[in-house]
Image (cartoon, rainbow, N blue to C red; front, side, top):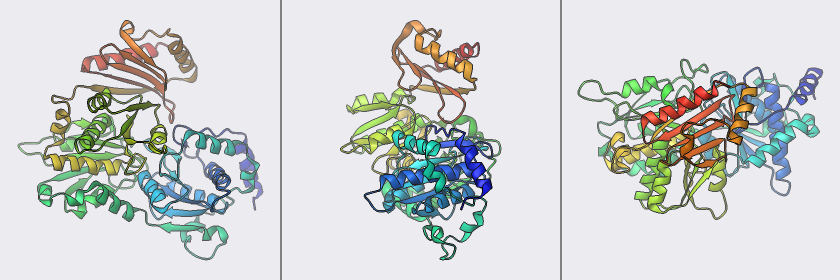
Length: 510
């Protein structure tokens, strides 16, 4: 039964469009991300699932949540809204990374999944990610249908989640008391099965244990849902490891939970050489929901996702694997170069891992690996989803089998020092200025740096300009934050910096 206050909340919600971004819905907690909206969106997701399973068994959904403020409570409200639709819910018994939720969906043959997380966004954000039955990011057209239901469907209101404030109801969700909705929800340990799978799939348990001697790893889960996961795997093999930012703190004090160089100062400092011997062989960082990865080599140099993607691709091909490769428009030319060397088909898609996942799950497809600039890399045979924890263990495996530190592995890929210098900068730009900039970029009226040397343009996602010397510049709007992103890459550090700085200075004049 919906009371008068809830009817008021619903009427207010129906006057506000719910607009989904790159990977579901995100907003600022207590502003445009509220219990009412989470319940409404979850009920809309439930309606979508019930409609799409009309001729099949009733859907079953996994629900997980990260370490952000109120994530657990938002997950409970989501579970209740889904349960009210007659959907069975497997609810994580603690915070869990997004890839753990995706693995659970795939392993248990569930219909879909919901992850309460704002991924790498600042502390004031939270969000909802939708996962498909493959464990992948849900495709654009499916997410759009959920959005349409949330903005227009009367049956969502009829099956609205109900007592939003009654969160304590779910503290004993395994109990048989409390009504039918409660019976549809079970708590489950999602961690153990995932860790067992990563160990077996990576084959790290089959590596000579003598190689683990004198090895020490440092891990930065960035106060996120990855806390305890990489270290739990390393502990199984008595691999020494230390952790920083390893406690739950929804404020993410001093950092944004994105494994980018500017957020990893402490990890970088701790891996730099001090004296004659370096303590740590490698550092790993995962973002707020642990589906993205960053790394630091034994000398304290940051290893970005382009290099990690390149290294993993190169290793798989050296080990005899084959297949096609997919990358987003913002990924390094190093991937193009390796694909050319091995005569592999390379697909380029818009930003967003769901665009990579579409090809990974395509019937008859042959995608070996896919990756994006922001740290998301997926190996299809593991699952069609990015996974920062899995990729950290894979990197460690490459180091152990090749018996080389990360710095030498990176510089050895092309037989000489890594030849690409990449940079990204984000700036805020108000709506009016952004509209004018986009118009000028479309019309060719924006005075790009080195405009006379542009060889190719690519407007698949934003505005990408490739130069005759293989350097490139990309300008695009973020799909999750009010930001304009400027990307550049060349073989020269100074040119990369100039492309970024010059473009920003031109934009700031708008």
